[in-house]
Length: 245
Image (cartoon, rainbow, N blue to C red; front, side, top):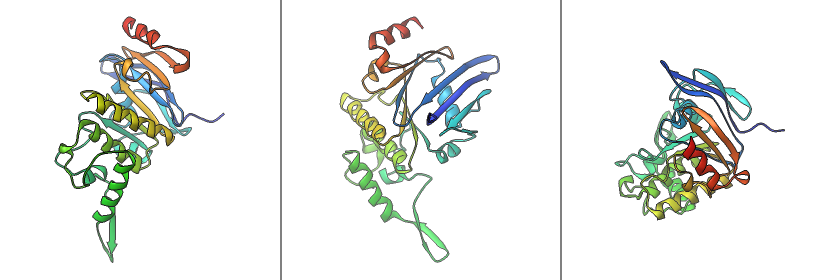
């Protein structure tokens, strides 16, 4: 039996006297879309911040491809193929589409002992990436602030795909998006799934993710109260769990 691509085991987190996570487990297989659901304060963001190295767990272990890992920073998480896309900070508005995709990981070329930015290559790669995702972006040099909310999500997802992410975490990816923008993000998620990438959707509203998710994990007050595959539950059952939690 193969190991899950992602496994978080018995994760605890204390913030002084506050027990924010109480032995939470999470597993995801290659190409699986996991909806991590719960109200504000349930522990969703804390769990994901542990995965991306923003905070350290008080107890518990994280495994990637069956190997135990210690993640001390977001840069270490990226090296392991873990990317997190935040709704409010998916892109930097004043930077171009190209600059956002290659932020902190710019492509370079050498002239003897000197390395310079390979802007031509980055522009070409940006055009290809955005075209493949169906993004309606006129030029790689367009500032991100002139893109729609859904397009900005797509730019961030393009970055994750280009740098071969194994796990992509989307934090409330449809918040404040139009219906068209929401549909675009759902298309992006399907593309990630096709490529075998694990997608973790951090959401508070199960209605928005029921059609796209393969598995549902519900947290309440730092505890996991439901972990179930879509085939074994219904939207109404999940709603009842969330109302009663």
